[in-house]
Length: 166
Image 1 (tube, rainbow, N blue to C red):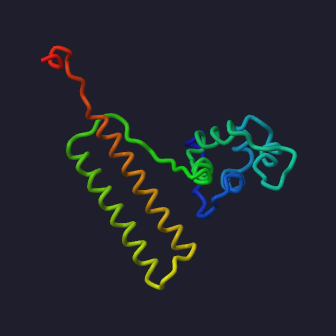
Image 2 (image 1 turned 90 degrees about the vertical axis):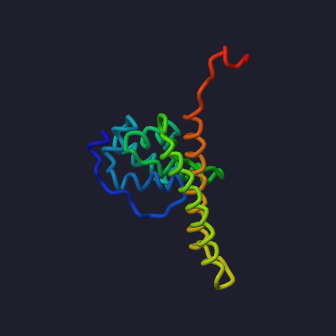
Image 3 (image 1 turned 120 degrees about the horizontal axis):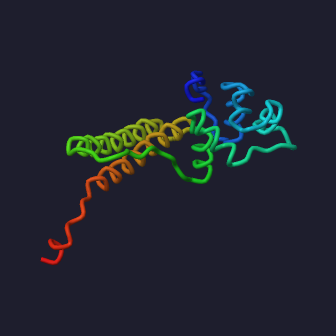
């Protein structure tokens, strides 16, 4: 199904997981959502409509939509609502150059946060848009740190037991 869905993701800045579920109806159409959620288009519309009181989307529905539509916005919004963040971890092992690149990316992301905060404080206050921009930079830094950790972990090698005893 991922290949069938070639629509652009919305630019809506929505932090409400239920509201994002509703945008799926607008972007991917109710028939696609219904197929993923294993229900009729009418039931899908109701489940993804934040104003509907009779049908509610389940966590299973949210996960299925995320997987099939290759769209993590709803799960990311739920994580953010809970004070958490989602990010992709690297797969497999990495070379020394890739590890160095990841370390440089961490430093770059930290610099981006510093720049964003300095720019936001120029007028003496941080407005909500500036706060959101800073938060995006912080999440990028956290993501790059977690990727760095995963890349270091991929380079860990076990010593043969004969060498450990020596």
